Amino acid sequence: MRTPHVVVVMGVAGTGKTTIGPLLAARLGVPYAEGDDFHPQANIDKMSAGTPLEDADRWPWLDAIGAWAHGRAGLGGVVSCSALKRSYRDRLRAEAPGVVFLHLAGDRALIEDRMSHRQGHFMPTALLDSQFATLQPLQPDEAGVVVDVTGSPEEITERAADALDALADTSR
Image (cartoon, rainbow, N blue to C red; front, side, top):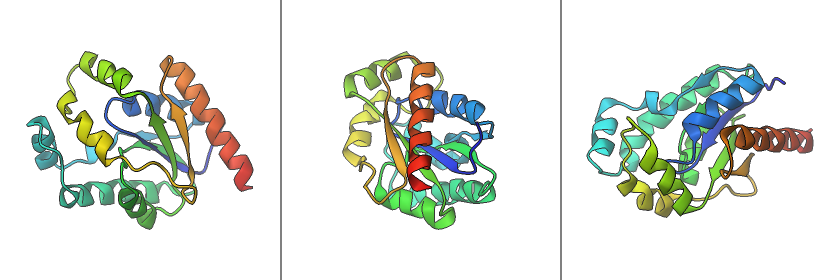
């Protein structure tokens, strides 16, 4: 399976963007980019200290992800990016109009449990409430799908690929 779209794997921290993104990219036969790698060090320092980012912190990060997505237009790719607010998704679309969003969504208790077991990540579970408070779900006019994060990474990836296939079928 191959897609010319760039898929932005979005959702609050702990939904599995970094796990599902590479699995989906492998399934689609396209490159994967880790959204966290686009953060300037100042953002990582802020989040590591438990301080939520402000929009002004996010603009350069979103622009860098958008530039990567733009460079992959027509070639396909998968990139992880929380993209919690509509304005953030609009900013990504301004740079890369053809992006499609895959919103990984789940129950707060499940996500908190998963976050508490991961190692070596700079995002503390203390910021999960601010993530949920910030989240603005995809709107009907936004190209994308919502996939539940219960089950194994392989099951989630399968649901994601099926949902993206169905979305592509409806847009033809």
